Amino acid sequence: MSPPGLGILVTAASKHGSTHEIAAALARALTQSAAAGRAGLTATWLPAENRPDPSACDAVVLGSAVYAGSWLPAARDLATAHAAVLRDRPLWLFSSGPIGVPPFPPDEPDSVGALRAMLGPRGHRVFPGRLDRSRLTFGERAMVTAMRAPIGDFRDWAAVAAWAEEIADEIAADISTTPLASAD
Image (cartoon, rainbow, N blue to C red; front, side, top):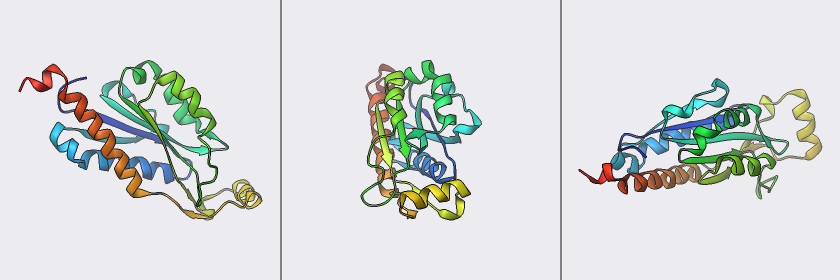
């Protein structure tokens, strides 16, 4: 890992904007964390749909909204296209989608197991999502009605910020153990 001044890419795929909002909150919390101040961490958030290149970043947080048990194609495609780069960096994955209390669906997304095996991330978090009928297509509204899915915003902003702190602390600890970082 390189010396202080690390750049963290936070990127996610979103269908109706909720997961993009989680990714933006993660990037803000990473940059504003106590560890960021100590270690010179900065985080940038970019939509996965824009196909950001993670090769210029020192660490990556990659996420996706989950539909029908799977990550969106933009996030899966980014992971596949940049698998070698992502395996070579500190990487965390997150999924957004369960709604209600208790969360529905309760299981980890189907596609995450394959992504974990391919990329070797340090961790994966599942965050509750938001279901806003006004943002859904006709077909999505019909499916939500048939499934009796709960409507509302179930995102846990405190959990998002706490996870960002954990990530920043882990990166800062990595920096403190490198010869270049300890030479000053």
